[in-house]
Amino acid sequence: MKNFDDYKDNSRKENLKFESKVVHGAYGTDPTTGAISYPIYQTATFKHHSIEDKTGYNYARCINPTREELERLMCILEEGNRAFAVNSGMAAITLVLSLLKPGDHMILSDDVYGGSYRAVNEVLKPIGVENNSIDLTDLDLLKKTIKPNTKLILIETPTNPMMKVADIEKIVEIAHKTGIIVVVDNTFLTPYFQKPLTLGADIVLHSGTKYLGGHNDVLAGIVVVKDKEIGEKLEIQMYINGAGLGPMDSWILLRGIKTLALRMDKHNENTMKVAKWLRNHPKVEQVYYVGFEDHKDYAVTKKQTTGFGGMISFRVDSVKTVNEILNRLKLVIFAESLGGVESLITHPVSRTHTEIAEETRKALGITDTLLRLSVGIENADDIIADLDQALK
Image (cartoon, rainbow, N blue to C red; front, side):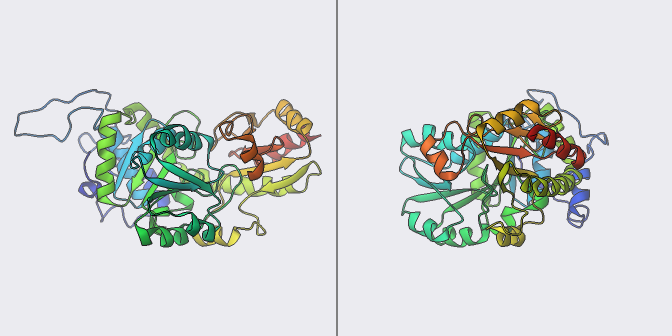
């Protein structure tokens, strides 16, 4: 994999606004043929002209031009040094966690996505990597939890599904005093609304399946790093584990990202409308949405983001109401995942957070009456009308 610095074209890219960057990509057009749609290099291997004449390409597990273009673009959008496109969001998390070794300690958000929780507790813990899941909005608790062997802090912000918002800059300030790596899962907000690396984080990761792809049609993960040395370590892991994203999936993600700014604005607009409507429904007991001014972390959100995103969690009055909603919805789809153009709803207790112990779930507020809604880009009135008929 080549250094991103090899491709920077400051005269063309750095002065562009985000909306233009996503459309035009890094190279954008194929430098060889001029193709407007960046080509899908569907090949496993590459010809060498001679021992001396190196093209920079050898074997697709290690490097592929289509994947490279995606990685260059993600470096531009997240303002990082190196990027790695892998074959799922969990592959992205796994790649980052490969930085840890037996005897190390890590800290992660307490209501982190169930898959991340499983990776930490079922893969790392048995080999001797310690961990603590804590409320990362509590900075005093964070200071007390840090140990001499703490090497990494994994932040979800907003968290999934309780929508807590961690102060990235303050966590970085605490962590970097002892050389702890700070990782931020930026899946919910994308670089359009939040740029963790510019706030001091060392690594940002995404489930590219979600808002980056945006159409529920591709599995992908993205890791972007700021530090060259960390990038070199992750590159070695990429070569070993062979998780690099294939050329077709890389192209699909490149195409999805072209409309990222437009989609995120629409998600943001729709979600505010839907959240306000839900809050006034008699069967809805609580709405968890970072865009409400009375959200306890609203000030942090306003400080470090430029939008609220497309995610809502809400608690209803009974399990009976949960079942009625999920059975009656017609437009909104009962399905896992999030971030696509279609509105999706899920039941975290029975779907996304089954790996977490019941006692822990209840303490976090992840109960059997909690639903998580990914608001799509349909007409907001249609989304509300569907929720209304399902709640009657």
